Length: 462
Ligand SMILES: Nc1ncnc2c1ncn2[C@@H]1O[C@H](COP(=O)(O)OP(=O)(O)OP(=O)(O)O)[C@@H](O)[C@H]1O
Ligand SMILES: [Mg+2]
Image (cartoon, rainbow, N blue to C red):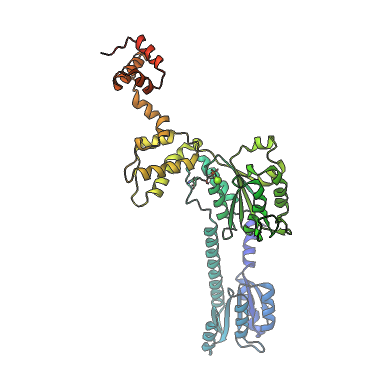
């Protein structure tokens, strides 16, 4: 059997119709018509039997006669709607009693068939019902997809390295896999952790972050696992730890590389058993997804014994390595514009080409956070003005190659270094009224170095 054929058979089998009718001959004809149209039909002779089949077989569509001995079609309709309101019920009425059909529709029937009906009429109405169900399902699927779509609205990155990161995030988000995010400070580790949480099935549950480096070792245990009243001096009431606060959702263990070594075995146990034991209390089970992050060099932490290997493997199921900004220079202009928009949203501020070039050439040791802060500062300090090279933070200007080329512009055919040196010394002395102490300070050299150059090039006050 080919794959396609088996798939289409399966699709038909899943189009399940329950038929309830006390009229045996009509039932047989209807059953045959539906089966030949590819539906999977369950047929029963009365309401009670029909409801039992409904509960065990869960058909999406039910066709029921209204007038039956015992349980009427109305009753069947009501019970089905109460049990599974999404079921579509088609009622069969006698030709002469359309008002009964209207009554059934009021009670929630999807459509009706008036006796006698043709095979075409029957198949048409049942097909219509399944089409509607298909649309509803598709809508639901699209809604689910939208809800679980990873939100990169706040994340910028066109570089291949960042696109790769986004791909991995999209793939791991809907899973329960643990993720370890590594990267220098300010590269966006927390943003990625949030995107993973947002894109998974736990997005409506809490995202709880704890910075293991910011909390003194003595407090970290109770922060993570909680404590009960009286567990230690100062524990005046029960307190749920971060694991319990994140129950059902995601716990983000930030700066995990700073986790005190003495606490690591306990964390390892919790990660293995997913049970936390609050200080002084009984253990209880928790259901949390773990995402961890570190800006430490994990390999050396492992080698130096500051981080337990077993814990590392528990956390590092899916590694995500965030590249530094230096390794994705092509993202810099995009990030600058992104933050400019954010910080000058009322009246957007522009930036000159040369300023942007210098920003792209800077090494950004603090990565995206440093860039973000720099843009915010520039916008605040130069209110409303177009940002230019001289608005850049001093650090960027002093390391920029364009600032160098502005000071000394070399002719293409070359130029003797000694002439440049002489010119520089003369200019420095002129600027400082031939005061040697100030001229030396201006050139950032000791005074004797300046005097040596003056003698070497025979420079004298005119
Ligand atoms: N790709 C990006 N697009 C837009 N903003 C970003 C991006 N990456 C980081 N940011 C922003 O930069 C700042 C730092 O990001 P985040 O806090 O996630 O970094 P981190 O790696 O956790 O830093 P640290 O190690 O210092 O805690 C945040 O304000 C974040 O919104
Ligand atoms: Mg962080």
